[in-house]
Image (cartoon, rainbow, N blue to C red; front, side, top):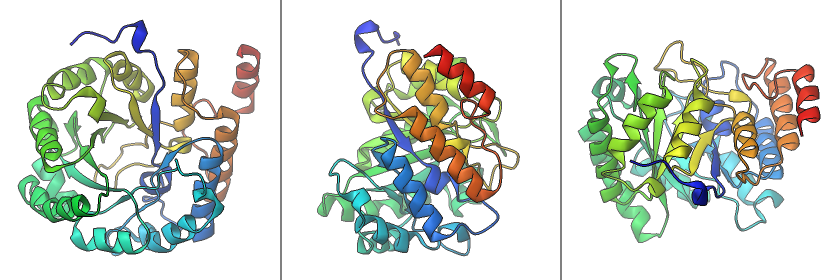
Length: 316
């Protein structure tokens, strides 16, 4: 695969996953008003696709128990007045899909894993069984003209099985595309990827799914999230998932840190002359706000300290 040339230096699309992927592992229950405030601040900063929740078992993911109430409040709020704002939610099965639609969902996502063991730990079924669960979701969504995105976890490595073969990821991504998913988000769930391994992955997966239908979802366990996004961009990927303040992690990948910080990706792409449509200062203010609500520091490097911000001001 050849790197994208200068003519391909167009804008990127950032999918903000903080309100779902970022908050789902918080030990203390986050109030509905805080979740809504987070989405509203992210939208005000210019993010146009914000993952708003997950219609999953509240027993397994208690933090997402109020997803229906949150989505309903957002759909009815001024934040949704702009027609270009997308508020997708996760729906693991037909029951979740129907509940999401009843709450006003216009976009949904399903989530699979490239590792059999991780699939069993995460959603209590094999990879094949997970696709069987998704089939009625995709069928219902097709009838109702609801776009469905797919997440694939453990695309580089699994905390239980170790390295994952790119061919296995490519096969699964191809199946999800054939089922009707408009985009496949490739997740480095435990954050062990490097630009080299990301390149090998994309070279293989792009033979099954066009690059324009792939997204990068990088975690920052080893500090490689930004570097991996840069590598994926150079190869032609133009959609990236990120979480404000680097919030997140994975309950089934002990020790893995959060997603790459949205503000760090904005800084990266701004420096490359690539449009993100996001106001970095407003995004940093949002990162500060949510970290204050959660009572802890964020993981994003751009928003790390006042000293760093002073340097950024000089560099502009």
